[in-house]
Image (cartoon, rainbow, N blue to C red; front, side, top):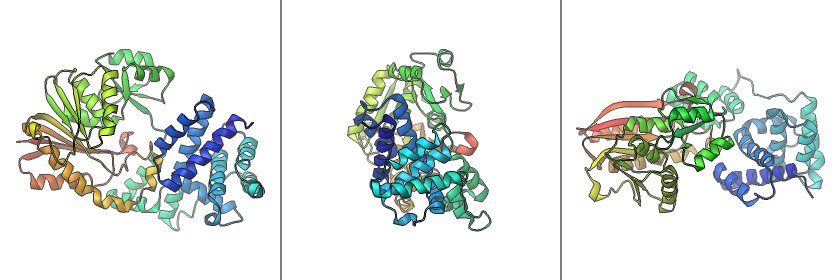
Length: 425
């Protein structure tokens, strides 16, 4: 019978091949694979599997460049299972410090068929003898290629960041995309005070996102508190959007693209569970996430419904004090948490601003005179952010922009995020 660590590596191999082949989101693949194999893995094995999948996905371009320097065969000619096994092996050797070299080598070799074991073993042991270097292209040669391999970010995405924010800011941003992000917990002050949550979990309070406690991962106590509705996971920047919204007790709030519900929950907590929050989403099958989350948190003022944000509910037009439009986006601000997004085909970005503009226009119809409209995304792309707001304001003279901010991981220490606040005259 295979050792459990071998099972963890075998499952990682299957997941990594599936992710590259099918383009599935890594978090969904990890959750699904762990669920299907819950009886086969200990907590330590689950952690190893998870780290290998996310780590190899994050470092894929760097790993491939290292492999190409130590392989006697062109990396593009390798079968997927062999190439993926080598990525797993090199990742363990170069980017982990608690896995013995002999285990990283032997158990990686065991992942491939008999006829390829000798080749994989040779590559890994040659790499060890060379001192396990981080191989990089000449920094003074092709600068974009150098940055791509160093940060494991595709060259087209680096070009995008440079065009959008300039070379100096882009390079600083790249350095932040592979960081180990802290976990943000939105404290549910309907059930527990900020002080009591801080005493129970430790961590630090966010300097700019009210009610967010920053912790290093989810301890068992933190998980128990989530189950009990004392807090829920929410990034600082996401919370900042609802701080900007400024919902108050007794008001009517519409969240037009609400799933999975974090911003609706935050608004309802700000409102002390008094008033009304309409949480709409295009995908009816996801609304149960909001309903279950609200019940767990003790929130009773949220009402969910399936709605296309571009076609507002006629009964609520002009009735809302505050409207949040957290538009579907490319997600280029959350690469640190979802490493597979870095490999997104950037040609898909071209269609998004038109969709976002339609969503923003639809959301604006809910806003009463003197009411607040907040537009937000979790991406770093001026076309989806500032330019969409500029277009909206140019065609909606009854709205004034009162504030606008782009959050950057390397500056603000949170997800990349954009939020703009507008008031209807």
